[in-house]
Every structure is written in C-alpha cells, then in structure tokens.
Length: 167
Image 1 (cartoon, rainbow, N blue to C red):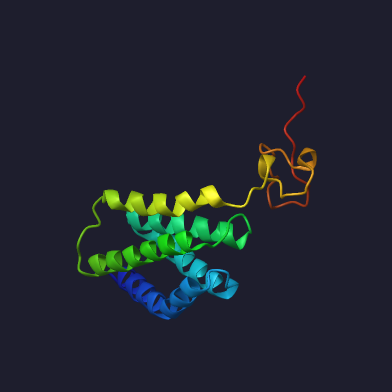
Image 2: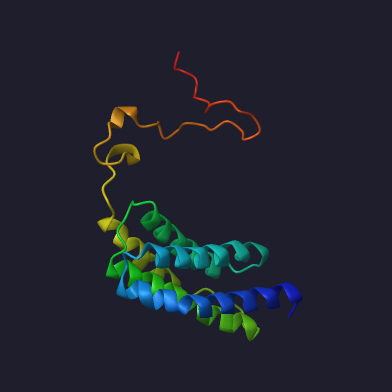
C-alpha cells in the first residue's frame, strides 16, 4: 500500500472516530446546526480525497450525502429523521469500504449503494418549496436570475455576463 493511500485510510478512520459522537448527537437532534456542519465537513473531505484515488463508489456515496447535507445547511430541506437515517447508513457504508480498501479488497460495484443514494434523495420530496427557479418563498420569481446565466471569469471584476438578447 502506498503512503498516500495509507494516509487516506488513516485520515478517514480518524474522522470517522471523531465524528461518531457528532453523528449520535445529530441523530438525537437533527436541527443541531453544529453537528450538521461537522458531518458535512466529514463527507466533503472524503469526497474530495476520492479525487486522488479510483474509488467511484466511495465518491458517489459521499457526494450524495454531501449534497443532501448541503441542502440542509442552505435551508432548502429539513434535516428530518428519514434523512438522518439515510446519511448514517451512507457513513456506515463508508466505514465498511475503508475496511475493504485497507484489506486490499477491490471495491466492486454493489447495487445496494444506489439504494442508499436513493434513500438520501427520497427525502428531497419533503424539501422546502423554493418556488419557480429556486426562488425563496415570498420572493418575486420575476426577479430571480435566469438559470442559464453565465458567470464571468474570476480573474476580473466584471459583473456576470448575460446571454445575448434574441434578435
């Protein structure tokens, strides 16, 4: 096992251990923002670290959890018990996958990963209604930015570029 992979395994195990108390506390109180943020950082880090290795299953699972937790952090969905349970199942799977990686076992495709991802996404049906084009409740949808707005490069101070007007 190379040093980078050994570091990835060790770091992920440390984060799993450190976040275990956060996970239990978040399960008891899904509205606890501090716990939500800590768990988000964990799955975000795992997902980011997957970029150095060829672990698409691990990346897909952590990405699904990150998206769901990000929606909670942004106020687009509630952290209900169904979501908490689904995220915890993904974290449990991440731990099992780290065990397999450490043992030198390949992470072959597993159809049950999709079931975990689907469970996280099911609770999106109970997400907070943001109205047309992602507008927050009570805002004027006519003032919402168009979905196809292009953003100017970060290297200048210009405002967002608009698509050309139809002629």
